[in-house]
Image (cartoon, rainbow, N blue to C red; front, side, top):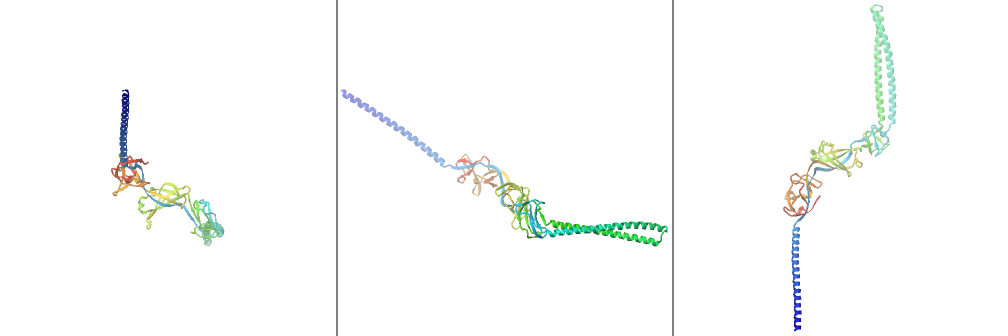
Length: 411
């Protein structure tokens, strides 16, 4: 009996353990099922988010900015010296000596440039000096003769007046009076002749002085002095060669005062005003800033259809020399306004448009583009505002109403 009861107790114990294990497994499986269900829902939600984001077009936006827009015309020109002198001999002759060479700096009125054969002209000066000395002596002799004749005339005049009184008193004979009267008239005529000789001698003196001045000038012209200050840019003759008026020997250019010149098309002639229109200038990579046009050609070339402009530059910096090439941008018009990046502007249906982002939605806007400078396009006031987000990258993939994802705002 005891044995059977013990067996029944063991059997009940085994049954309770089995039920416990089964219940535990059921609980575990239920928990795993719940976890798997939640994980599945999470993955589905994530997939939905990915799908939604994959439908957004990524873009970069840039705000319009206010800046100066200009209408310019670019060209190239040359740097030229304002003051240039091409020196040739004043009188023909052999070039005896050239005192300067290319690159030398000369001073106006002081530096000797070259000299032509001077011996003959120096001798001519000596001859003219002698001629002047001779005529001066002749003049002196004529004046002395005039003084003698004048003295004799004055005595004859006194005697004549006295004989007139004597004749009135019948204290002399008519014959003696007539003799005294004739002597008086002869001396009066001699005085006029002497005065004419003095005047003629004076003219000879002035003639000799003029000839001497010319001779001295010719002699002085054998040595040429620099007419302007500057540098010798070209030497075109050597000592021993014949020199003639009009045949250049040296060229002088003043590097401290230069002009930057260029030619523009005739179409912009009305837009350029000397003293007002400005231009940006760079020479050999050296920025010279904005300069005012100082010269505008009064005519247009009838064949080339161009006209010349120049601007003056005093004391140019080192590296800006006559003969250098200049890069020029003539500013024909300029104004302040709002602008967008040039790449933001698209052509759709023959119209210029941009895309503006509003609440992550692309909105197409038609614009009227104006001037374009440095990658920016002018947009008239009212078409855009400074606070707008204008698409500057990704705009080619957009249409009206498309949702976008702003990646960043361009500076």
